Length: 342
Image (cartoon, rainbow, N blue to C red; front, side):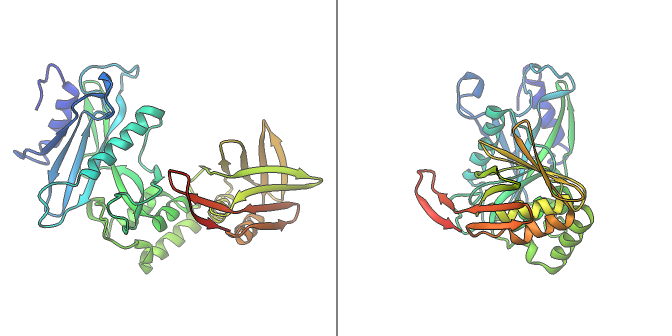
């Protein structure tokens, strides 16, 4: 596809795909104006392979395709290329354009923030994965090694083929309470090659999956060490500590605290203006550390916190800890309130 003297990284990706797709020419979607020249799209291209039941997308541009520019000699660029497997209808001859835009958006996030994705990471998409499929339950994603490609050695360092896996919000909640990699090991029996299917139901409705999640949370606890939320604040009222949360996030935060503390772990909850760290201990105490409130809870107190933190505005007391929950407002990108919680 390219001149190996000019693009050894690109050709290394092509070479890795050749055994999987021998003598198959993919559909390729190139970028007209490259990011390095001031364009909006970080990916130089996306190849799409047609499989019997799905489309297999592979990106070019997260790694160093042309020359070694990063300082780490062992890793090429950001260290990965995205892959994405999307269920294909029998009469579908071309992949949907939203999927290409989705990959560019994820790449743009990495390029602009410097935050990289790794296996086990997960994101809430804050809406359907495809805007033209508003009824789909796929509204979050997690990441895993591509089951057929893995990790590649190139002249510029290693490149991981990092597959994006679309999941439902119920499955996303299970990821937070448990662990993404462990959950995918359960879901893989129902999702061959971890294909994203916009028409499928939530697998947490399956009794065997639900039982595996419940047992995993009990056995392993939560691997989520920190979350960002719109509202978290704190203050002292005499010998009482007040923690303020939004109604939309409060139950989720409290469940995570209980899952973490029960296994001797902590959870850092941050907003743009404040932070509260919940820690495991024998009994409640609270202290400030460099502007961060640290709340120490026993497993029993953490379980009670999860019980009282409901999505309803009010003050809920747990000994010398008061959980103050305020109403949450769900807004459109234009700022219009579309839902009130609490």
